[in-house]
Image 1 (cartoon, rainbow, N blue to C red):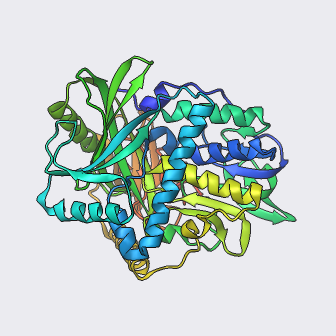
Image 2: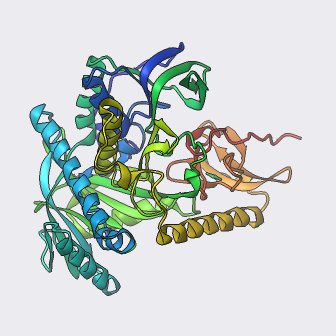
Image 3: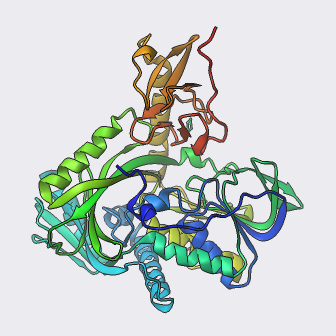
Length: 505
Ligand code: FES
């Protein structure tokens, strides 16, 4: 079983060096995913000097693990936005997505990017009577906002469902082939790319200066934090204004005749369906879903098993040779935070909270930020997506809810009963939570049977991490930090590794 995504297995990127000296630039972008690469492409085309740094390899993060639907159909959203923000803003949100989809289409067409771009209709469906009214309400919102779409009792794909809401003229593609072009262009235009270069801190010495883990500095006029979670907070308290969700995808060769369309249901468990072409000949079916709050003690293997069972039950699919997972953040009002990190500092930008709709939200973010830097322009969507936007009543309610859940997790982690003496039975490539010298500890046995013993207290704000048996990571249920089995940080907000413990006296 390949744990790389189908996109990663099908695309090879050149290696970029690690940053080994201090540098100066106009724009420093931290994070080489879709947002960072698209921003580097747009800025470098205008002759702006960019340095792009990535903690791991380019496109190794959430962009490499997406389902890659290019759509304005972001689940049930428009009826909610009308209710919480009014018709005008809901309409603006739709227009922003439409313009972003046109941007992607035009780039592909003008540059003849070979990335399996295909227009498809998108279907939001339910097979649960309890959700029929929500779907009706969303269809009303489409009418109010002039969104092309309709309720239907017929879908091209034969799966059990009671009602569906169709949005016409959406699209899908191979995200890494598309971004390979953008990255190569950015490099041709003078962008310097550094991999295995971890941004730790932001300092100010006449200029913003990014300090890396290896103690090198990148001084810049503008900084774009294009990491999934902003690696700097600047009193923005983003960890308290978002929650992280994990989702899973399985994929195998499809031997039937696929009738077209991209599908996602509204109820739990989520089922997201599309096809993709690999090697320019084989059709693969991608089934996603089983979403849950990151770090919840869930049996991740079961999430994959459920998706595989659904795939085999519903479709003509041969061996399921790929499975992967991704984490993404949702904001208080479900719209991403894009723009200056605070009102006081217009030269530090963040882009986060894509709610698993990263193809459109990430591309939109790159455009908004590149406009702000290159054109000194008032992008029409600045205010709508501003991280400092007005907190409406429903947002404040969610703020309270998110943080009550975090407080509950914090308490639960501290009070959990830990059964003693389970290390002896530990299988290779598995982990257990136990107690070591009075501390709650996580113990992982690697392939060489070496034990990695860690204090499970998250170094962000002290919640207790849980073992993710599918990805072999320690995940925090409070704000989504993820750690390698050896304790190193894979995803923030945490910056410091988990504390190592010893089993010896
Ligand atoms: Fe905030 Fe763990 S991510 S406490």
